[in-house]
Length: 119
Image 1 (cartoon, rainbow, N blue to C red):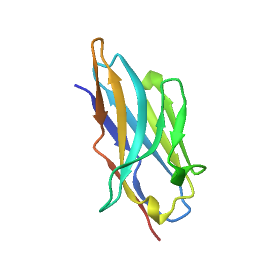
Image 2 (image 1 turned 180 degrees about the vertical axis):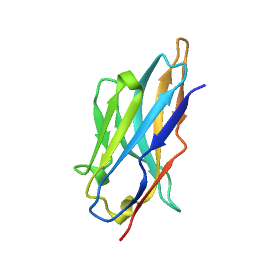
Image 3 (image 1 turned 30 degrees about the horizontal axis):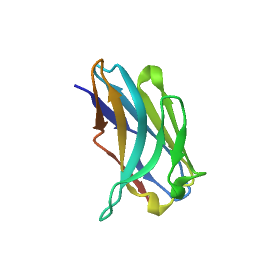
């Protein structure tokens, strides 16, 4: 069984910063891509940022230049540094990981962490 545990969400004023963390645990052989998605009320879940095991990244246009994704392969962890936050960044943020076992693989989601940007 694999679990993704997120932390770091909260309430922040516009222009502020937050850092999200996500750690995967369980019988993991390796992890390919890891990423962060978000879902605002009444909207579909969308990709925020993703990173491969080799460190290649891609970002949603709406967060480019403000958010930075990184990972620690030794810890099976992924991070999202968010700066210059805007009210439209308010959403539940979900961690995602493409986990590989000795045989086969599976895609996992975290439970989500709320990020609220408001004055």
